[in-house]
Image (cartoon, rainbow, N blue to C red):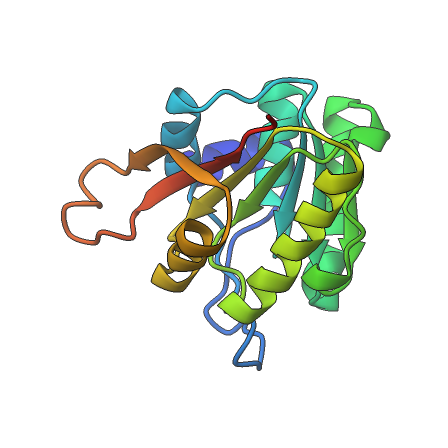
Length: 203
């Protein structure tokens, strides 16, 4: 029910298809975060209009449109799959036509995650298990290099976080786990059905 409601509200089509896969051991199949999960997350985690959020492996742009619509945040979607990227661009046209939001606050880029040039304003990064830990480490190094140049607090938001991601963050970085948001009814059956939020504080 929420899926159809939000797709119509945002004037987009971001639904997944089991046949839509990336043929790579490093990049995982496309699956959008359920709207019901997003609703639960943002009951417990604040997004501000001043936030600049990057969604790695954004697919067709669901998270981006949702955050821009509900919280007026600036969003950047990074997608390596040209087909998904083209759908995201089409969704962007439909979304902007209906909402009349500032087009500069909703952008997409077709590139590998590790090739995205982290911008000085980027301060929130979203990952729905998009790629292997090897790629994640490269992306995280890019984020940390950006923080070295432009000091700011950084949040990493994970849905379905892999054990490898968590181990690397907790053993090899200064990021701290600040919040865990388990999904009602799902977490009891599957411990990965939760959001984890890690923060890098600036001393």
